[in-house]
Amino acid sequence: MRGDTATRLRMRRLATTTARLAITLTACAALVAHAQGAPAVRPLAYTRLVLANGLVALINEDHSAPVVAVNVTYHFGAKDEQPGHTGLAHLCEHLMGEGSPNEPEPEKVFIQSIGGTSVHWAETGEDRMQFYATVPSNELETMLWLESDRMAAPLSKADEQHVASVREVIHQERLQNRETPVFGLARSAVTRALLEPPYQIDPLGPMADLDVATAAEARTFCAPYFVPNNAIVSLSGDLSAANAKTLITKYFSSIPGGTNPPHPVVAPRTLAANPRLVLEDPKARFSVLVFAWHGAAYDDPDRLALLALASALSDGRGGRLNRLLVYDRALATRVSADAFDMERSGVFQIAVTPRPNAPATVIEQLVDSVVADVIAHGVASRDIAPFQHAAPVNTITSLQTRAARADTLAHDEMFAGDPTAYAKQLDRILALTGDDVSRVAPRYLARPHVVLNLIPAGKLDLISRPDLPYTNVTPHAARVTP
Image (cartoon, rainbow, N blue to C red; front, side, top):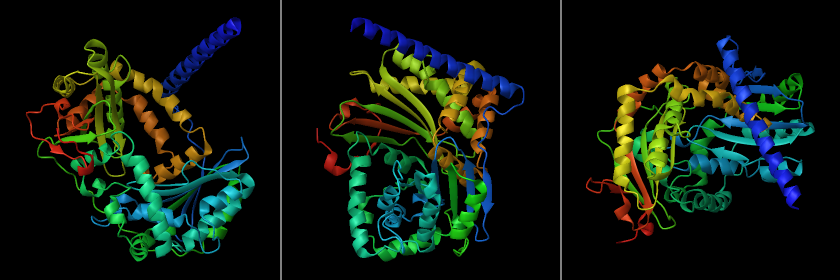
């Protein structure tokens, strides 16, 4: 047994070394190709079809396995809702899954009956709603028929009985994704304090609004968005593009288009000061200190430089904040930085997990000093080189599944007007210099920002800068009086 274990360990180390070498070679090859003028990654090949009713279809052939991913994306989400009537988009997503005029079973049950599978089946975010599944390739026509059936008669199951049933499902979903996870409400706290009004709405909504929502209200709000000219059908897998175009035309061309649905204007928002927030969680055993600035939207070129900046601050021993707080000063167990994007907005965020008994005030002062130095002196090209080396591999591996390919094509078509925008953005990442990143740092990080203390319930002594006023955003039921 000892010899067998030793052999397995040697083989594991060999496999790890080989994998690292392959990743390094792939990244280096991409950088060389980019320097020679070739694209860093080969964009997905696709066929585009636009029907007379405005429906856009994107078709990617991949015959390596006998499956097809089908993704239908509608251009609306939580940001299109109105205060006091939130959660309706997510409610409609669930109602659309309850069945359609010619298929009385819930969509999930039906798709499973033909051999289909999915991760979540459907999702609703700030900007889009999507329905997706992967099925055997011989069931492509069945899936297109099913999706066209519910697009042709959206919300056909939106009655009070179905609304009541779906409401209970969403209750459980909110409990699972917001209220049960430690600090699960942190995202909502940051977006409400930082972002423009359309993006302050949580896609899961507060249950108070959903509890009084009616079927008629759901139909009135959502129906204008479930039209062909507001949708993208994206396919990836073992199919013939010519046959797929024929089937899409057969099942979707007769659905009438509608007026172009409205979307709210997202006006830039400037914070007058640095909002300081506290969120207590009775399940937490540690604290987290979060700093959040207004960021860049998906198609904004600044987003790529912000991603590089986030890497320069937090990735590996070379990340400035990671090196200072985790390794040099041993004040934190983890530092992360990232740039999150939406269609018309974004968030640049730094999160620090302090070590037990580490003073949060000192951590905040050190974060402020590093950010100030970056604003004043920028970063060097060598600081973003690890990010650039990893970017080609991350892009390639993110497109391994057919579902990911169909989703990426639809996403980039909707938010960048180009299904392969991701590949062009990768080329721009590889062309970034330290000067590019240094230019955007003061544009974003010199603005006022949110400081959020995430702490165990009742542990207000753990917050940073207790001398400054703050807002406790903890739901009253979760607060603990010291």
